[in-house]
Image (tube, rainbow, N blue to C red):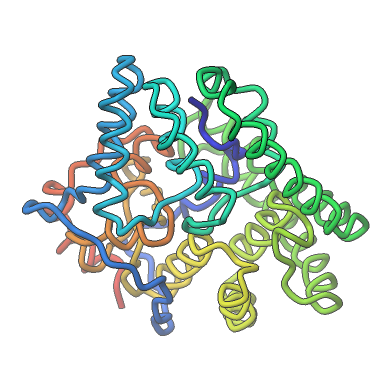
Length: 358
C-alpha cells in the first residue's frame, strides 16, 4: 500500500502558523464558503465522522494484514460518503482488495481512479502510473487480463498529461516555488533546534517576508500573462506552488486574486482543499471564524500552537472531508504533533473567540 506522494511542505503549508500576541487585532469581512455539495453521514457523536472512522479502521486492518476487513472498511467509508473520496483512499482500497484476493473490487477502485470518479486533489497521473508498476500489493492481480489494460490506460493518461504541460512557464513557476519552500524549510529547522519565537526565528521571518514579496511580483507577472494555471497545464507540483505563493502573500493581495481563485476552482484549475486553506487564511486575518481548521497561531507567551477559532466545530470534519482533507485530529497530529481533543477545544473556544474575533 502506498500513499499518493505529495511533498510534505506542500501538505503542511509551512508558514500557516502566524506569530501573534493573544491581543492581536484583525479586520475585514468573512469570505463565503464555496464547497462541493455532497451528502455525508455522521455518527451519533458529532465529533466523529463515520467516513474517517472507517478510513482509520481500514488502514489499521491493512497494517495488521487483515486485508479482507480492510477492504470492507474502505467499502463502508465510501458508502458513508456516497461513493466520493480521494485518489489516495481509492488506491489504498484497491491494494487491500488485491491482497485479499478480490480482483473485481480491486479493479473497480482502480477504474474509479482512471475515470476520475473522485474528489479532485493531488491526482498526478505520473505518480499513479509509477506507483502501479512498482507497488507489490498488486502482484496478486497481475495475472488477471484486466491488469494489462488498466496499466495501458494509466500509461496513456500519463503521456497525455505530460504532453499537455507548458514547459517554459512550468520551469519558471518551479523556480519561484523552490524559493518559497527553501526559506520555509530553513524556518522549520530553526524551530526544531531553537523552539518557537526564538531570536533566530524572528530574523529568518524577516528574510522570509522579503522573499515572499519577490516571489509575489514574479507570481503577478505570470498570472497577468496566463491567468490561473491548472495542474494539467503546469503540473500538480507547480500548481501547488502558485497556490502557496498566494497563500503566503499579504491580505490585500489575497483579496485581489480571490475572484480569480474562485473561477479557477469552478474551472477545475484550483483544488478544493487549496480553496479551503486560502479561505481560512483570509478569515483569520480579518478576525472571522475559520471553516476548515487549517490555520494555527503561535502564542508568544506560551510558545505553543493555538488552533484559531473554528465555526460549527462539531461539523468541521464533514467540511474537511468534502474538500478532500484529512480529519482535523489527524491534521493536528501530522502537522504539529498535537493530540487534538475536540471536547477540550470546545471548552477553550469561548475564550479564543474573545481573544481573536472582531
